[in-house]
Length: 191
View (cartoon, rainbow, N blue to C red):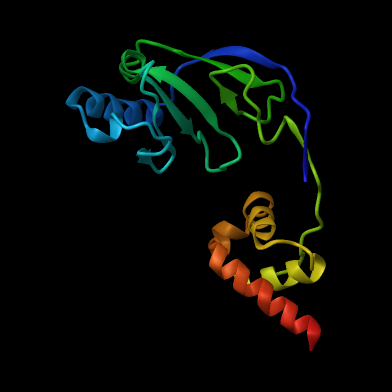
């Protein structure tokens, strides 16, 4: 459970990192070519390993992108740009004006000051997580459900992906796998 506690943000001007500029260059070329993926309102038709987005508003021609500047998926930049601005950022002719979290360690930034940061603008319930050395996702999940028998599989996935390094080590859960492991955990409790 999370409680919204919005904090002020500060306006910053940053140069787009090289990987983001390359992605936006590819997007700009698709827009210039009239690629169908740039003409349909969507939040994820344009993708690469570290960014996704699409045409956010057909009427205004505004595109929205989510960019992950590091390995962590916690830090993200939410960016809104017009087609001309996409090309200018890609060509290094325009800085991004973004609203940054006050917490310097966060690194998340937004085109709109009223956007909410999942790390800074919410008070999150802290759950105890399984500790120990796990050789499989299954072992970790069963230990988790033993600690939190009331937890929904999505909570387990969120805690596993968001609060541990296990995903990189053992891989990530699908909802189907998490649901199956919750069922196994419940049957082990009954026996």
